[in-house]
Image (cartoon, rainbow, N blue to C red):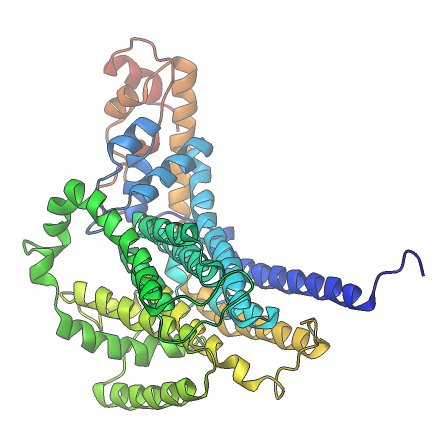
Amino acid sequence: MRGMRPMATVRSAASRAWTIALGCAASLALLVLYSPWIREPSVRYDDFNFLTKSRTWHEAFANVWQPMNDHAMPLSRLAAAVLMSVVTRPSRIPLAAELQGVLAVILGMWLLYAFVRRELGQPLYGLIAMTAWGVTAAYYECVTWYSASFFILSLDMTLLGLLAAQAWRRTKRARCLLLSGLWCALAPAWYGGGILAGLFCAAYLLPLWKDEPTALAPAPTPRRAMAAALAPLAGSVAFLAVSLPRTAEAIIHAGHYQGRTVFEAFNLRVGAENTLRTLADNQVLGAFGVYNKSMAFSWPVVLAVVGVLVVAAAIWWRLAPHRRLLLVGLTMVLGTDLLVYSARADWSYVRQVHNWTRYHLFPHLGLVLFVAGGLSRFEGRWFRFAPDGALSRRQVLIVTLLIAGSLACHLPRSRTSHFYFGEQGDVLKRVERVDAQCRVEGISGETAREALGFLQFPLGYGGENAWDFLRGSSTPKPLTVDEAYAILRNVR
């Protein structure tokens, strides 16, 4: 009959609607998970440096290659300038900074969905992956700490690099490899650990498993496939070629190495030991919401847990039909942990590193990809798909329960980890009132800061001056410091 659509088209449209709805539900669950932090936001420690060094675009470009500890983060410096130019009221900076991490995770969730769905051919697997990676408190520092939210943006670049590499496998177009290299070059510009993005994408492209020819392109020769795997690594090398001449000296002699160089502080043996420890007492258990901030496992327990994990991983590898994802996942977990914990070998694992969840971000994604690669083994048992790939009621229920279960498991950690200093909000409101008076009276920011002296910024390292958030008038009058002080001293 005229005007009626085929039943398959109707089912396909309904499936897309359910997919979008479930993806949005997972994104909403993330907002609920971090609602305490959104409701009572704060900025702290390294955030002060990013925000005040990028107070204006002129300052941002002047400091764009200034490392943060041993990380060259030019895109993070520019992102801070965007925030400071958009958020003109100091009292609103904490909320804007808090939202960056949440929005970066949501972006990563949808990028991960696209990558896994295209790789495994079913939207169900993409929904499972985006939920398992995104609705979690396993790396809550990255979501709730502005300075660490740049780690997530680095991961988002990595996912874009993987999507471009995936597009090359389907089309064999050179521009896909160029894009993958570009995203891998941008990943470390957000956070130093992103230098491994090229390695992750190269692992994905390695010709260890034969690609079948498609309608878009024939299967590549082994030599061409190996050359393609080097393209993402070229992106990482390109970033180093640009950044090291500008930052190497500061990074090699970073202050937190206490007089040692980065090479003297790097210890691969300690890194391997701490990799085993964090796998046992943090990253795998943390994926299920299990954590203990006050105690790390003893070595006998670590070795027992790691032994179980190795056996389970070997079985899963044997069962998995998509080992390419498993290889990428293992590379993310082990590559990230070895780099991070070798570079942080001088820090006590039990007293410090054990609780630094910001370093669990990439390994958690690796765990999700490792698990996702084996799910299709159970098609026909747990997962039955219609010929057109439409989601069944059972699959909708599976994803719904996963979202609800993930939220229930991880909400306690988010709530108990949240802290808030109301004093910071009061200080920023005072800065805001003084800033408004500066604009009325035509007082420049520089003159006002000199006149006002020092105001301790709460949740800093101790020497941060809250007046550094003060911008002042864009059309200042020729006032002296004493004249400015006489005008501003009574503003509270």
